[in-house]
Image (tube, rainbow, N blue to C red):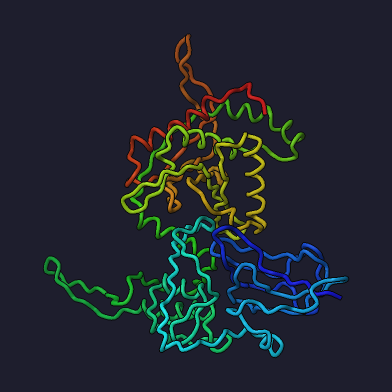
Length: 468
C-alpha cells in the first residue's frame, strides 16, 4: 500500500488560498477517481476538490472553516501499489508532524516573542469584484498562512472580514474563539458581527427638534446608520448566505463608487430572429448544442467595444485604465436565486461558434457549481440578459471595477412603421430594448449613447445569408 498526498490545487493566478467548507468524505471512506473529497470556498466561487486516484481516505489534515494555502497537503489517501511511503512534514506555518500524530486538530505554531518583536501586521487590501464572480483588485500577496496581532493568530479570511466590517484590533482580540488554541474561526466572527448588528440597530438617543413650530422626534443611532425593521406576526427572518452577502456588499459598493447614468435604445431584430430560426436546427444537429441569442449579443458588444475602446475602461482615482483585452462578463442566475458572472476571455477573438460553445459551457458549469476561480476574473464589461425572465427593460448596476453594464430585454412582436420605396407601411416586427448603465465619471452621455446605438446597429443589420 502507498500513500497519496492530496494537495489544494492551483485555482487561478490571483487565488492563493481557500477555506475548507465541508469534507464530503470521512476517514475510512472509499474514494473513486475524480470523486469529490472536500468542498472549498474562495473569495470568488465555491467548488470541490476531486481525487485523482482511487483509494481510501486515511487522514484529514485540516478542519472545516480553516484556511489552506494553494499547494498544501489537505488529506492522505491510501492507494494500491507504490506511493509516498510516509507523510512529509508540511510547511512550518501550518503545523508540526508531531501534532499530526497526536491529534486530528490543526494547531497553529507558537508566536515567538510577539511583544518584544512588535511585528508589523500584514494588511490585505481586498476590494472585492464580486457578483460572485468577478475580480480582486490590488490584492497584495500574503505568504503566511495566518496573521497575528501580537496576542494570537488570525487567518487572512478572518482579518479580511474584520477589516471590511470596521472592527478595531481590540474588538477583534475580544472575540471568543472556538478553534484550536482559542483561534477565531470564520463562524466565530460572523456570529459576533450578527450580534453586533442587532445591538447597533437599537436607538440610542431621542432627539426632539422644532420644525415649523411642530415637535418632531427622531431616533438616532450613534454607532451605525441603519434602518430599523420591525417584525410582524408571521414574518420570517432569513439569514443571508455567503454568496448573497457578497452580492449585497458588492452592489452597495458600486452605487457608492460610480455615479450611474443610463441610456436606452430600441432595436428591430427581425432579420436576426429569422436567421436564427433558419440555422438553429442544423447547428444543434452538427454541434450537439443550442445556438442561443446570448453569443450573438456578446459578439455585437465585442465589435462595438473595438469601435469605442473608451467604454472598455476602469477608473483608478483620477486615472483611466483602458483595457487591452475585451473580456465580457455574463451575468448568470443560479438555482439558489443568487447571481454569478463568469467571464468570456478575449471575446472579440472568438467566432460565433466559439462564443456559443464558451457561453454554453460557462452557463452549465455555473448552474452546477463547477466554475473555477479564474472563470469569474478579469472581466472588462458585463452583459445581462433580463429578457430571459420576460422583462422588456432594466437598469442594471455596474459591476465594479468596470465602467459599464448592458442589459437586453425580451424580444416581442410589435407593429412598426417601415419606410419603403412605395411609402410607409405598418408591419409586424421583432422588437427589443437595450439599456446600459455607465459610470458618468468617465463615460458621458454622447459616448454611452453612441456605443449603445452601435450595438443595436450590429443586431439590426444582421446578414440573413451568414453561414456558421
